[in-house]
Length: 231
Image 1 (cartoon, rainbow, N blue to C red):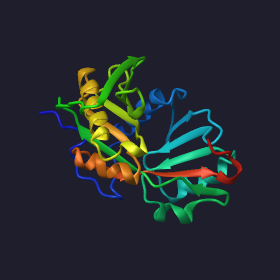
Image 2 (cartoon, rainbow, N blue to C red):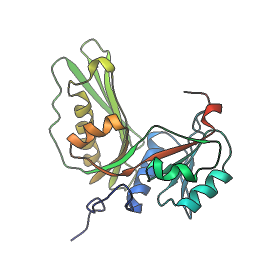
Image 3 (cartoon, one colour):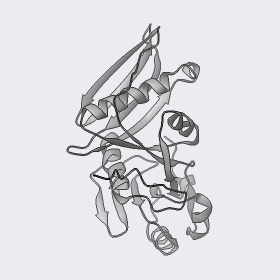
């Protein structure tokens, strides 16, 4: 019987399945229209092309020697490193001139069709282009309420959920759950059997309530963040 790569227990410092990290990278670059990832011995590199995030490096198995080397080597403002370790672990390894992004978590879930009823007073629309499906919820008068998107790379069995957002005045109405269930159904319909995402601390609670589990911390290191304009 096939083994799902999401079945193994993970802890904050456990090794995350490298194929799960690869799937997250490949789906994320589709979701954000980033450049195709280039693989190195230590991980993946791709260009995001935004003022605050020019280039991103993802390190599936970071250690002290690697973090020290890369933070000393990459010196351009707007360079990011993503590591699957707690920031408390990584902090003493960073070269001067580096700071942290907000805390995050890599999360995963198996996919199966679920009910996704739209609450009264709202409208849901989805559309797909180039392997990316977006979901939008608006109020009866067309005001933005919630959104999200999911990328399913061609031939992949792991989708990447991204950009989940609910308007402040529309929270606690089940719209985030509606978006997540809708995207799960879309991804499953496209052939994905599982999904992965990068969660904020606030989003983590929603995703856990929907059956997602935390695989590891997802810590972002930013080169000279004070020199980079906010976007």
